[in-house]
Image (cartoon, rainbow, N blue to C red):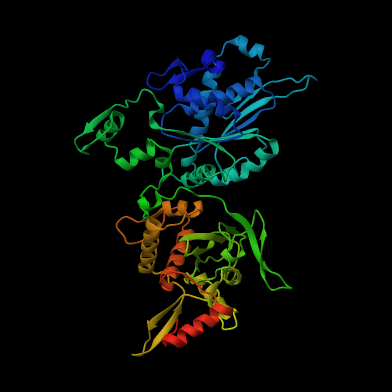
Amino acid sequence: MAFLDDFAWIEDKNTNQAIRFQLWPMQRECISTLVKSPRLLILKARQLGWTWLVAAYCLWLVIFYPLQEILVISMGETEAKEFLHRVRFMLQRLPDWLLLRAKTKVVKDTSEYLEFEHIDDRGKEANSIIKSLPTTQKGGQSKTPTCLIVDEACWNRYFREAYNATKPGIDAAGGKIIIISNSIKNAPGWPFMRLLYTQAMRGKLDAARLFLPWWANPSRPTEQVWSEDDKEYMPLFKLNQLNEGMDEDSFSQHYPETEQEAISSMLGSYFGKALARHESTADGTRGNLHRDPKTKEIVFEPDRRGLLEVWRFPYHLVDSWAGDWWAGRYCGGSDVSEGLGQSYSVAYIKDRHLDEIVCRLRSNRVDAYTWADMLNMLSEWYQNAIDYLPDGGLTHERALLCVERTGAGQTTVKRLKELGANQYVRQLPGKVAGEWTKEYGWSETEQAKHDLSEDLRKWLRVCRGTVYDAVLLDECSTWIQYEGTRRLGPEEGHYGDCVIAAGCTEQASIFMGGSPKRLEPPLTGWRARLKEARERETGWTV
């Protein structure tokens, strides 16, 4: 903090003059997080001075600490040079005695490279460097930087590739990562930035995050004024921007006010307000199912990398089970991919009694044939009772499955038929009058996708249970209807497999009809004799 307050100068772009770096209140509040966080994601409105702040942090590191290798990745050559220009601008205005006291000096200065001399206790070189480079798909693959900085990440078309290529080197060096981004929804690097940020929000990514709204710049007027065009009060800064030609959507991207606004879908989710009531997401128990070769029973084996995530185990397998059996309680749905590492195969099981999704099976590496075997086992694990037998035994059936049958799904549906699975079936008129044919699974035509999406939206609005799956809600938030068309689907750069799987699950539930039924066990002993006597007396079956 003292380095910034006492020695840092920045360039005023309006006057091209050097001015003291006077920290704004929100910048000052965030300094500790910037310095202490090994992984930091900064999502911000435009023009909040953070590139200057991070440049000052880099300069401080290389002056006072040996063996620093800071790699700054920008979206292009011009931006890479601009970052190092800012570092150099501050360096040139430091007092000479400061570098003498730090026992360092600049030994190399190029358009993309600054090196500072440091000598360790044995008289050996322990220099620190800053490299500012335009991004490539390889990123810093051959380097082991102690600090990676990605500036303007949303505009970086190779952001994902550069991050994945550089991160192993950062991990090996025990270094830190700082990513700075605006929330421009149609920018090429935004989908990956949003993915990282939402993972950090859900605790899936071990990273600190900072959100900086437009009013973090204290020069922007925040007083509420009346907008005659919009017939509402709004901040004066926003009204000025709208009056100068910026539309509402552009303003929310360039100058978001809240974290939720910053990560929201550009065109507005199809599910809209139906998502607002679902905020209690939680991690389930991860694992895999397998069949015990001796008992033939299905066994759940915990595995933190397992493909199955369970929020509620089958009711008859939990310790608190009271012994009641249910008919029509479980159903499931699935979207199917080729299993080639791109889109995902996803399946859900719904508990119709609790009215909530209880597990998710998800993978992008399982082929459609094997996926059918996994679905079949899952539906058998979440079995439904049918009825009691006269001898007190019980009949069961596998949970009903509705599988999206387009493309790879046809292979899954065919294999499920071979396995005798309990599948969703529609009766369709045949080619000859009076004939009917059976169609297994859900055909993903555009109309069918509309029906599926609308029914899922209705369920999300009224369901009694909790939606635990953050991945599903995240995909729902980017599920849109494309302007000027009837086409529904995920916003560019996002997945929609969970939406299709959840929609198919709801179709299975609708197909089953009615409510789950708790089965009454057959009477035995004196209760059975009493029932028989009453039936003889009244002539009615009780």
